[in-house]
Image 1: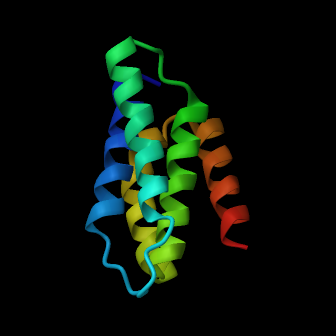
Image 2: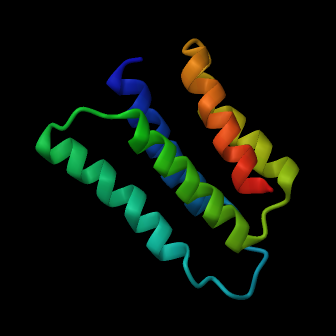
Image 3: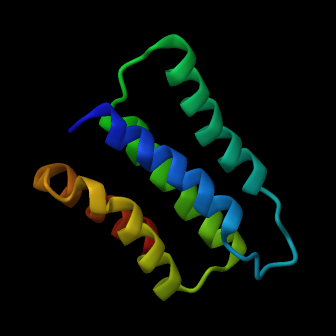
Length: 107
C-alpha cells in the first residue's frame, strides 16, 4: 500500500476526531489522543519516515478511544471507520487485521 494511503488515514482520523459531536460532558483524554495522531503525522512528514502499518493502526485506535470518550454511537463509528478504511480494502490482510483490532477494542 502506498504512503499516500497511510497519510490519508492519519489525516482522516484527525478530521473525524474533530468533527464528531461530543455527547459527553467530560472531554478528558480527547486532546491526548488527538495530539498523538497529530504528532505522528507531523513527525512522519517532517522527518521523511516511512509510514508503517503500525502507525495507521495506532491512529485508528486513538480515534476509537476518542469515539468512546465522546460517546459516539456504534453505528456512527462504523460508518466513519468504514469511510476511512475504504482505501485499504485492496490489502485484504491488513484490512482484516485492522477490523479484528477494532472489534477487540469495541468488546
